Length: 274
Image (cartoon, rainbow, N blue to C red; front, side, top):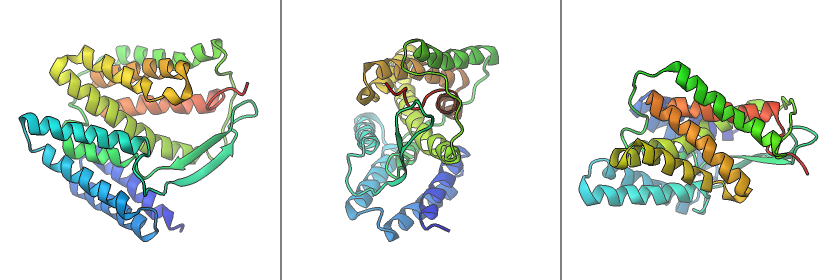
C-alpha cells in the first residue's frame, strides 16, 4: 500500500465521519492523517503550527460570545482563506495528475490531492457548531428545479463557446470523484455555505446571506476570468438555495459535486481548447 494512502485515506474517512457527527472518530482520523503527513515529510513545522493554532482558535471561539466570538470567527475566516489559497508554507500537496486531457478538444488539466484546503472543514466544524445545518422539511419539486437550473449553466456555457459537448470517462475518473467530492466540494461548501452564508443569514437575513456568499464564491474563481466568476456566482446561488431549502450542508455538497461531475463526463473539462 502506498504510504500516502494513509494521509488522504484517513482524511477522506474523517470527512465522512464529520458529516455523520462522529466527533471522536473524526478527531482520531484527522490526527492520524496529520501525524502520517509529518512522518512522510509532507508537513513542515510551520504548517503544523498553523494547523494547531487554527484548530485551537476554532475550539475556543465556539465557547465565546460577543466581541471575542466575532474576533475568533474573523481569524478563522482569514485562516481558511489562506489555506484555500495555499498561502501557508509547508504543505506538500500530492500531484496526482499532470497535464492530462479529459478529451481531445479540452485544455490540459493538473490535479493535486490537497492537505491544506480540506482541513478548513474541520476547523469550521470546531468554530461553528451549526456548520452542517439544521434539518427542515423541504419541497423536492422546488429543489429539483434549482438543480436543473444549476446544470443548465453548462448548456449556456456551450452556447457562449466556453465549452462543447464531449463524452469522457477517463481512467482517472475514480480519483477525480474522490478528490472533488470529499476534499474540494466539502471544503468549499463548508466555507461559503455552511459558514459564510449561514453566519450572515443569522445576522442579516437569508437573502443577504445567500447573495453575499454567492458573490464571494464567484470572486474566489477570479483566476479563471470574468466569465468563470459570473458562472461560479450563479452556480453558488444554486448551491446556496439548496442549502437554504434543505437545511443540510451535504445536500449543497451533493449538487456542487453533481455539477462538477457532469461537467467532466459530458462536456470539455475544464474548458474548450481554443
